[in-house]
Amino acid sequence: MRPEVIFFDLGDVVCRFHPERRLAALGEECGLGAGEVRQVLYESGVVGRWDRGLASAAEIHATLERELGYTGGPAALHELWCTAFEPDDRVLALVDGLRPLRTALLTNNDALLLEALPEVLPQIAARFEPLLFSCMLGATKPDPAAYTRALDLVGVAPEAAVFIDDKPANVAGAQAVGITALHFTGAAELSTDLAELLAAEE
Image 1 (cartoon, helix red, strand yellow):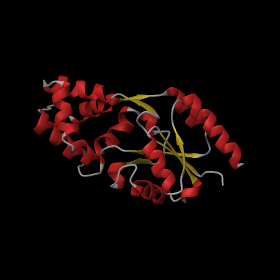
Image 2 (cartoon, helix red, strand yellow; image 1 turned 60 degrees about the vertical axis):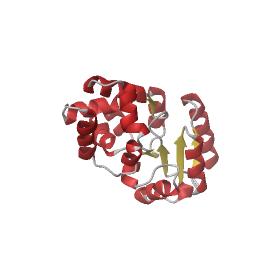
Image 3 (tube, one colour; image 1 turned 60 degrees about the horizontal axis):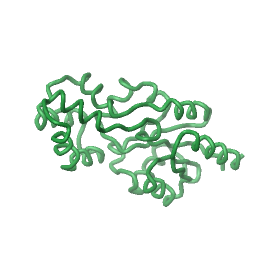
Image 4 (cartoon, helix red, strand yellow; image 1 turned 90 degrees about the horizontal axis):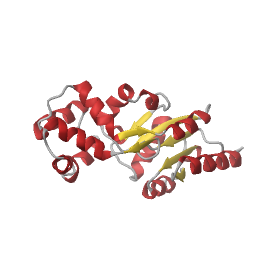
């Protein structure tokens, strides 16, 4: 069966992921070291809760104000939050080459990034429909619920979907629910893998 939708992961697939940039930018804005920011947000587990949809974008902003002393407005926070993501033009060219196949984003991320992405990185948001974030799904990869809820939202069966991720555990999670999944190791390798997959399905 030729796929009806191809799901792409965001961090380290569609974009290179540089979390240290976000930590440094937040620290600079708040007069804190990057290590202090990491402790408050990541080592505490709060970002994991945000990724599971346990806070709105406004609630995340309020937490940053309360816990870190952040004083900027929403637009500035959007820019700052997206500093962790650097679009990979080689992968975006592959996405464009898949047309008219449907491409969707499936990422473990929070409501603040979901709100910011179309504004700060429109070249990403415009290429994927829908933008499926774990905060919307109430589950993070590799939880089977993340994949099955994503499938329900796009209205396709597992065997009609392909999923691409850089983390082997997430690839295995997709395969466990019946989705064809590719382990991303680079744009050149992905181009070969997709060409072989789509040729075999014709």
